[in-house]
Length: 253
Ligand SMILES: Nc1ncnc2c1ncn2[C@@H]1O[C@H](COP(=O)(O)OP(=O)(O)OP(=O)(O)O)[C@@H](O)[C@H]1O
Ligand SMILES: [Mg+2]
Image 1: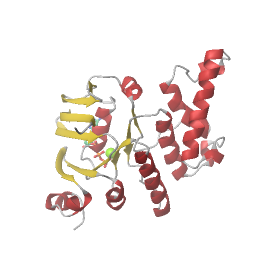
Image 2: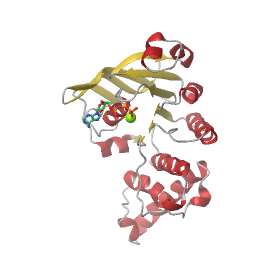
Image 3: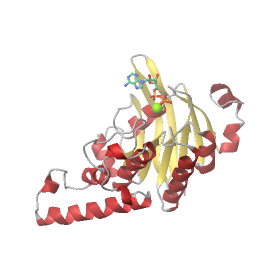
């Protein structure tokens, strides 16, 4: 039987009369890369916000690992194993690279950033483990030698990778990436796409919003097209590329 890590059913979200999502349903199998594409304002980020608990759906249900999370707070959802990046990267500008990754660990473990300064044995042990895990993620992203850099000393691409590293530090089961390829050049896109494939090979389930159809086609198992808050097509890249409704709404013919 197919194991769906997340099951979204009939999710509706309105903002002051604007139908951001009109009965959106989506099931994602564990270990797959699923992509959401669609024009600006289609409701893609709103969909992410609802999954991770930053917004509450007006109606509909969301099951993660068979647990109803439609009314669960965002911090609990993060602890259950859903981690996301933002369309505009969010950082702690006064912290260096490794500390920005460790923030993800602090969200996951009982050690807060402030407690970490205390030298209590339990906290010391957990802090050590947090540090090891954070460096592991940095190494995976090939940024190990940038660990003590200030954020002002790193590139735009590195910022995007660090935000993903912070998510990975939480050891999520589901990774939500909002436009991870946005603003990257071709070499950087290839590098990140390869990393996402490696994550999938390690068993991660990934949901990506992006506008780079070529890259998405190469890495996604399935593509969902949103337009005006509705799913207008769903399937493999080849099928989506030639779908007339999708071409009309979004893709150049
Ligand atoms: N908090 C909010 N309050 C009011 N309207 C909102 C809010 N969040 C989103 N919207 C509106 O809902 C619609 C969907 O927005 P959303 O950000 O989900 O689109 P998107 O598909 O992510 O677009 P983009 O590709 O530009 O990022 C838009 O019309 C947007 O203006
Ligand atoms: Mg968006």
